[in-house]
Image 1 (cartoon, rainbow, N blue to C red):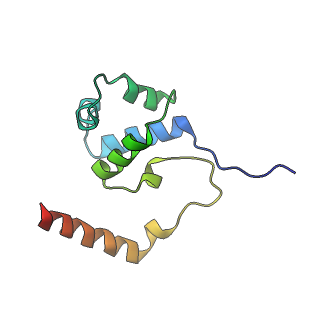
Image 2 (image 1 turned 135 degrees about the vertical axis):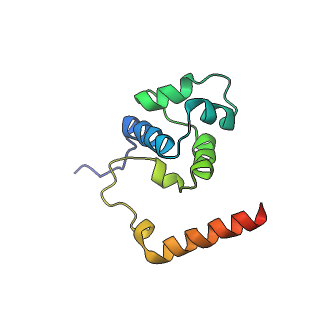
Image 3 (image 1 turned 90 degrees about the vertical axis):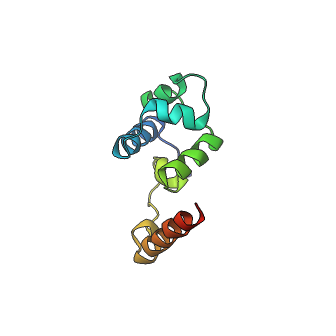
Length: 104
């Protein structure tokens, strides 16, 4: 019997990050500067599925994109978390945005 083990799809994760960047009108240069990377090659490697962002970079990207880290990573999980579609989660997200705006 083979146990099911969820795995990250490196290529799809890179493409997902690229799509989110495009939707938020961010460039590779923007991400490079935000993460403090000396060269942009690592970002292009994410897009091509050659590597994944480090946990620190994923955490920072989730803050920049204002998305949970789990929304950035794609894999073979049998069931996706459904709480993102929950009305309560959307309310919390709105409250969070307003709170962050007040703190700025």
